[in-house]
Each structure stands twice: as C-alpha cells, then as structure tokens.
Length: 398
Image (cartoon, rainbow, N blue to C red; front, side):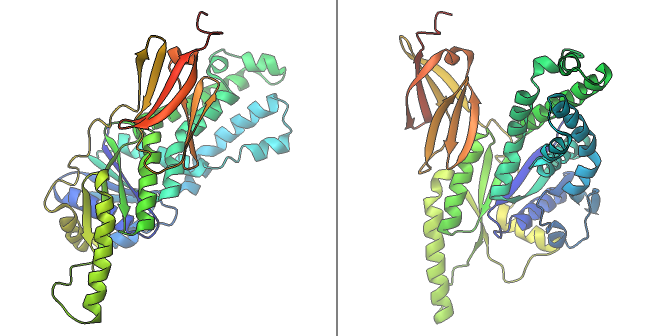
C-alpha cells in the first residue's frame, strides 16, 4: 500500500521547510513511520532538523527519517540512457546529430526526476507518511504540472500506436536495426507508463498539498492563485497554514506594544479574507529559530493543538470534470475550479479545451461526446467554471 503523501509549499521565505519538518517530527513522535524529503533546490531541511542530510535516506531519530533529493545526481544516473533513445528518434526523423543533442537537454528533467524519486520512496519504503518539502510556489506548480506536460509532448512526438508496433519506425526511417528501434520504443513506453503513474500519484486521494503563507496581502493573493492552479491540475489542497503570526500584546504600552497591535490587526484582517479557503491553521512567530526535533515538536504542538497532523487530509478531493445535459441539444461541462478574481481564458484546441488561469494553461481532454460539439458559452457559478456546448452540425451525425 502506498504511503500517505503530504506536500508543503509556499512563497519563498514563509517557513514551509520548518513546518514540513515539524509535521514529520510530530507524526513520528505519534508512532507513525515518517519520511521527510526535500525537493527544494535550495535545501534547508537538514538545517531545520539540525542534522546533515544527503540523497540517501537516513534516520534522524526513532521513527523519523529524512533525505534531500539531489536532482543532478538523478540526471547523471537515470537520464543518460533515455537521452540516447531520444537521439535515436530524432536522428530517424532527419534531425542533425548536433541539434538532436541540444533537443534532448529538456528543461524540467531534473524536477521530473526528483518527483519520480519521491514516488519511488513513497511506494517502495516502509513509510506510513512521506512529507515533502517542495520548492517555492512557482517552482512547485511547474513541478506538479510536468507529468502532464511531458506525457503530452511524448504522445505528440512518438504516439502510442507507433510505439506498440514493433519495428515500425525502423522501417519508416530506413536506417538502424529493428532491435535498436524496438529498444527505443520500449524505453519511451516505460517513460510514458512512469508519467501516467506520476499523474495518478499526484491526483490520488492519498496525496494532498498544504500551503504555507505569512499573513500579508501579497502572499495571500499568491496563495489564492495557487489553490486555483492546483485545482486545475486536479491536485487537492488539504489545508492552509498561516505562519509567523505575531502574538497579541495584551494591554501593554509603549512603541513596541503599539507596533504589535497594529501588525496583529493587519494580519487578522488578511486571515479574515482567507476564510473562504476553509479553516486556516496559525503558528505564532517565535523569538528563537526552531532547530532540532525538540524545537520542531514544540512548533507542531502550536500548529496542531494536539490533533492528528493528518486530520482532514486523505479523502475525496472531488471530481474535477462532470458533464450534464442542460437542454434538448445542449451540454454543460463543469470544471470544479475556484477561480475567484483570477484572469481566465478558454480556447478550443482540436479535441482539447485549453483553460488558462493567471497565465497557467492546461489542456483538458474533452469527453468523446463533446468532441463533436462547439463551445457556445462559458460562465462562472457556485460550482466553478461551466462551459456550454452544442452539437457541431458538420460532425454530429458522423
């Protein structure tokens, strides 16, 4: 059985690493086998735990294990052979050898391999829970979108129906051996299968993202956009944590107390505006930086107040897409997408619907019924985005 997967992300500098480490420490202290792993290129997980970490899993203390994934090492180990196979495909398509070398240096490969390593750890280890300290929000959104993007590129470059016909490309290209092309087809088939497994892992009910913010308007606005972007990918957010909330000054007097009152009032106003995102956990700003498991347990106690850190975590994230007949010859595709004040754009691209929210685009494969329809309108309602379709007269009877 796969481990529960909990990913922490947030704008750079909000304290996501500390809260990820605190959560994993609390889970281990509660008797679970917990692994906390960092995919953040600027690793600081070892600093938070107060122990040196490497790409290999090591035990921090009873029940708690940790690792810092090194994407560059994964590229050296895992990407070399696949690049060779891709060069074979490109050479067979008539691409110059030097150009083929450049084209196989794909952006995002390091992050994709890091995500694959998380998957391997989650599915292959004895863990009850794997907590992931992801990079800052923008990098994390790109990371979580990569399996979809790579799968789409792979299918366009080397469609499934060609991969499954043994030796087909060797005959088409007119060069190389059948065995060489079959080996390439096998390698690309394994990549496609791995990408599908990654997508399944990210959208699984046992996977969720926990967003960390500081109570500031700019950070809160980014958090809202992140909730929408993750919903667009079909990835569930199971909670929001507001870190570094300044303590109430009470009835104290003087400039320091006045500053605290003003700052806390501003933070409370921001937290009130986030109420529609559900219950927002809060963590008070501490005078000393929490380093080591004892200090992290103290942070976790303030964060979870004695409750299970996974409370409300695993469960049904809801259906992203649903289709209903709303008229005699009209259908509505509903996309459960909390758009809010985000900018939204729709476009039809072949058999897909391109949905762009705040510059982030996803191609949503249309159900077969709607592939023969035209988009007649779209609107936002309480359920998210509703896109209306009507039969295309040129295709409907085919």
